[in-house]
Length: 88
Image (cartoon, rainbow, N blue to C red; front, side):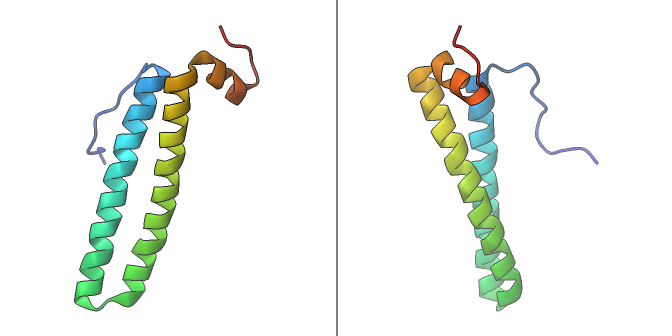
């Protein structure tokens, strides 16, 4: 099995969060499209499954967007609060 996306190693935190946001946005779109397709096909059980997955991905997206916004505004000081360390 080979992942569809490219592996990105050694990214700075802001770039990593940007990658995470992009991946989550893609997952949200995918699960939303699948749920719509299931609804159109009358498959309400599978639609409910995709809606549950969609809700989880939307929560991940919100979290990554919030962290990325805090990093952009506060930089190392915010990262230090996440790790329990001191800002450099």
